[in-house]
Length: 534
Image (tube, rainbow, N blue to C red; front, side, top):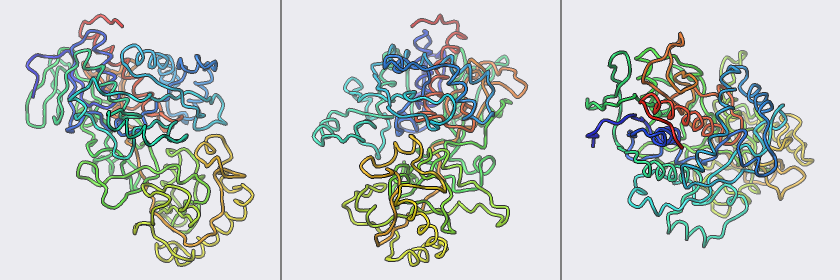
């Protein structure tokens, strides 16, 4: 149903950025309406790990390990490869401490510090503890709204810390019965409840395709069916990236698989609306890259589902190879940086040699670890290709046989001693965090010796695109000449965020998006003549 009264602010999209922007505006006194294209609220955030990278956060200080702004700036400058100006990074760092403060003040959500280093622990300015995650969230007060909020079919009601330590099955069953949510599902549920408490209205299954200009300013939007929705202060675009639009991917992303792990609704609607008004864009060739896998038959909302795959690549006894049978990356790298290596171009062969890739492992690895959705004790499914010899396996999947045998022979000789001279897998604390702490001498390395041998096809995936509309320090969309498009704001993956080509640590997408959403929501409310108050 379309609203009868005119809201102060319309927010297009209901992921964590959109929810945070709406909440920030509502706290400042604005009347807010959130419009969601899909039938369910929560977007990609709801199926994520819900982890938030936020430098200078209060949890670090409470733990007696306060962060340092100059060190954080040094670290971000290196991670973003100089593609993001110091002014933008500084603005983000200045706003970052307020995110946790706002979440704790405005919502019932509570958080724990993730005991992990930044993704590049050897870089100048790297720290531990810059990320946090929601504690389990009881959805009782949401009532019937629970069925309107997206959850992940791939994640149970356990935190990342509980998953690593092991969780009592009875407690898991109790949480499922009470609909206690964790990770991204818990984060979104808590934000939705806080928005409802502040009078934010929601409408789902409504696609916004155009913006309304009045007097040179955005004062509303139109649905795909031609209906008009007006607003007093403008529109906040938080509609996600363009990873499900073949046309936009062909225009901007590298020619590789580009398989999205998000639900299939992000087709660049907000980006296209902004472009039609002359908005500037940045980082359009970038995405939150990852290695990915598709399990036959799995779907998101009627479309093929893609899972990101991380820990299986770093556990001892597996390797990632291309069609020449060669390793091409430290498999324990951050999933974003690892995903970038699929784009490598070989000028000699004049091709992208890593577009076709496989995870290779042996029977010992299969017996010891869950692989994607297959439990260690379960029989290998048909989509696991297997053979008694490496040569036979290579021939079955189209890998150069001599290359695979040579690679594994060389890998095994060093792995027995816990070494990887070629890519240094398991040589830093980030990589070790993904390994098996019960395996030595290197938790990330073991030889592949026990037949049968297995191969799983690995895709060049992404968790969403991260290039988009350029914004100023208040979240207002700007043109290439720096002039502001009055009444138009953007946050989340529809906007060009402060991470540019980089990924600083776990939660490096949600943290910056939510931080800038707080600022943008407050600015939009102020533009409507509202007086901010906490």
